[in-house]
Image (cartoon, rainbow, N blue to C red; front, side, top):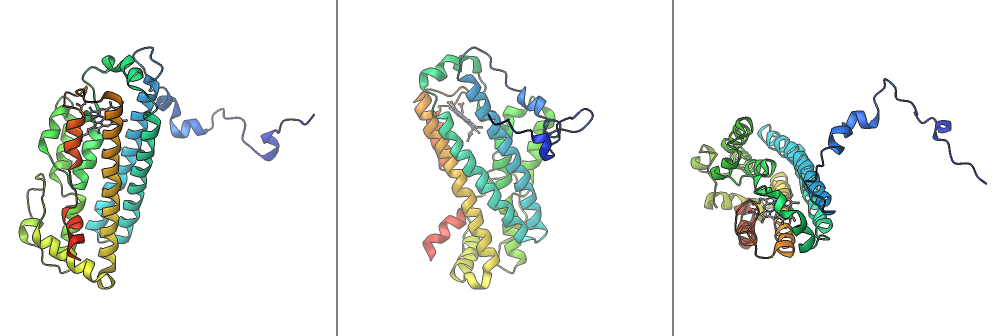
Length: 278
Ligand code: HEM
């Protein structure tokens, strides 16, 4: 009979009295004790963990997007692209996560849905922060956070700051492209539709990638990110449709019809439009 391996013989640390362990470093105690199902339904744990892990990935996405935006302001396009690539992979990861949630049937969800009352992902402040950071500005989305003044102020500051795409626009101007003043100094809290001059700038970049390689690569990183973000919205919608059909959401909206409307959100208008010009 072979003896079980003793990792101590291989040098593994086995005693942690007074020393920092894995769990200490990661603060696993609060993280793993933050799941509090309100009822007895087996699937509520899945629902909670799915949301919590999504929020953790969103936290990382915010960390990366903020740094990527600062990189652009500092003219470090390479560092920005590195971070954008990571954010796109985060969304890819979040997209795969829907497959786990989809194993929950409508009847299993109904076992605990009433306990959620009016709470809904609609009130995810990190999701709103991501939207504001990448340029999907909407003042109305601040309102569900008015009851937490610090959070409201944080989101409001984010709404009022230039977005990632605004910083890209400022960069294009610094690189000599003709960008009208109204795009360079504006009320950053307002959403921005498509702009002909910006489309023209991207046309020059895409028609001649060799001459504008850095901007071209940056543009494709932005498109890649938006592509994965859109897939997240779409996967959310289909998952929701599969679980609640045409019922209203716990957050009070029309549910799938609301999410369907959100699917038409475009972040980097001109980057999608320019494809038709080539
Ligand atoms: C059983 C699973 C889920 C259902 C039935 C569901 C349903 C809904 C519905 C109906 C809405 C529209 C607002 C409302 O009236 O409630 C919504 C919004 C939202 N949900 Fe979910 N959801 C689910 C899972 C998730 C997960 C895992 C996340 C990840 C964090 C999430 C994040 C969001 C976000 C961010 C919004 C706001 C979208 C926007 O305003 O554009 N949802 N959800």
